[in-house]
Length: 367
Image (cartoon, rainbow, N blue to C red; front, side):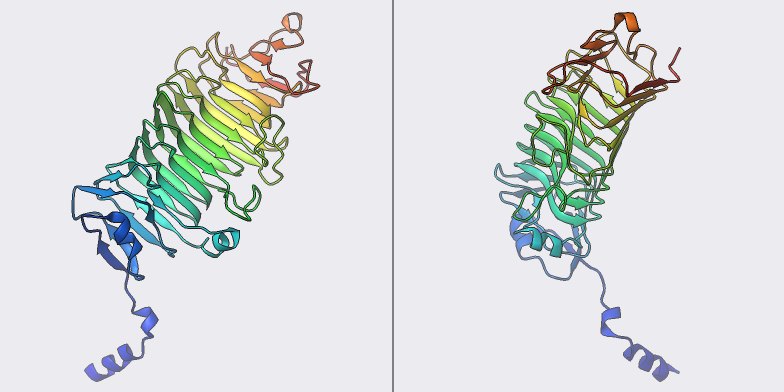
């Protein structure tokens, strides 16, 4: 019987007996360790020290699945470091490595550097339970990261941008072939520095969903900058033909934005759902600056007399449902060519001179 069992084990293909391999990241040069990472690595544990340093980029190899567990450690990055990043030569290379997947989690703090997380060309990657502090360009920058998930990511004092999802910007990449589609941000917070430009940025990516997120600290240019201008020209309505939707729910804003709290420039048929957004106090800048898109506002239960929506086109597509009764577009006798209640035509695009409410609808107004 024992001999029979041995023969059965001997017949099992070698590929089925390969095990996941765990490595402990040693104290010292983190970038150097990753540069010589064994090919069989599937789980990396930052458990050899409470504090790690990396002066350069921590380049991630192509991997079917690589778990990077911070174990609560503190990781200090050099000023020129892009943090955890990927090397992508061109779109052909990006497509080749698109099956790569990374799970970066449980860092007590990643401090400094140009960026903390700089992922490119991944499918299903995640960043969870991490605190990112004082990056100079962006705390998180995802390019061509399909179905990515950011959960409980706390960004503190980003010098430039907070969290960015966008298309690839390497040779051969375009706004229609290298997007960060169907990605999710959950319970993420950006605590802005005085120099922060945009807390959250979503560019040329469809089906992105943000829930239970917070923007606070010093006032940024924008709390959310949402655009699908394929050529990067914000002086006209967005025209990316493959971006169809964006969803935001339970967004909490705790400061005054400098330019606009939420900027929206999406294709004319793209659905933009903004639900349960709360601005805690008066806003000097518009709460929404709108150029294009099918904008749906729902369940906004707080609205002050200072809150304004500004549009750059004459005939905005806006539906308001179950919102505060002060979110109103006025009576006919009070409407003008440039103002209707909380809605104002400001910095209008060429030939947009008279505000028209043909596509503005209000339903189930709060009493």
